[in-house]
Length: 106
Length: 114
Image 1 (tube, rainbow over the protein chains, first blue to last red):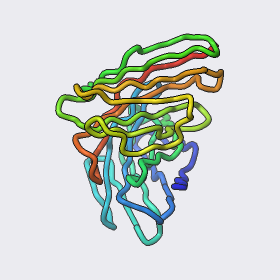
Image 2 (image 1 turned 45 degrees about the vertical axis):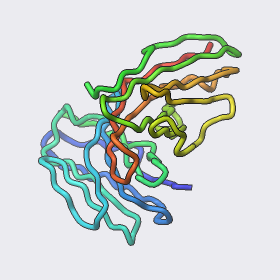
Image 3 (image 1 turned 180 degrees about the horizontal axis):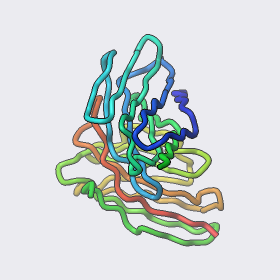
Image 4 (image 1 turned 60 degrees about the vertical axis):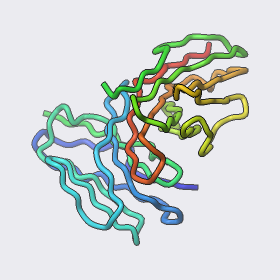
C-alpha cells in the first residue's frame, strides 16, 4: 500500500512555528501534496513537492526528501485561523494521510 | 469557492437503501475523483475518472459504483447501505491526469445512514 504516516495532533501558540512531519513508502512516488482542511470544510491545496528541498510560500514552507520518504510542512507566525487539519498526500495512487490536527492557542 | 459543485449537501437514509451523489467539476476540468472521509479513516480514495473513462480504483466497495457522463459531471451510486457507510463524500476535479495535478474539492455530501 501507500502507507502515509503523520502525527494525529499538534498544539502550538499564536506566533510560534510548527513542523508537521509526514513519511511515506518510497515505492511508487510521483510527488507529495499538502492540503489544509478546516473542520467541516473541503480540503484546499497548499503545496506540491516533486524535487528534494524546501519550497517556501509565504508563512508556509514544504520540504521533501525522496530518498528518505519524508516530508514536512512548516507553518510560521501561527495565526488562530491556521487551526485546521493538514493532510499529506502521495501523488501516486492519490493516497492521503489521516491528517494532523493543529490547534493554535492564544 | 472551488468551482466544484456537489449535491446534495446532506442526505439521510436508512440501511439497505440506495443513494446517488452528484458532482459537477470545475469548468474545463476533465478529471473527477471521489473520496470518502470518516472520522476514523481519514480521506480514502474511491475512484478516478478522466474524460468519461475510469482511470483508477481505490478502496471502493462492490456495492458502490460511479460514472462520468459526456458533460463531465459524475455520479457516485451507493447501494445496500450500511451504518458504516455514514461519512462525508467528497468529489474533486483537476484539469488532467498527469502528475502534480492539484485537486479542487467540492464541499462534500454528508451521508447519514440510520
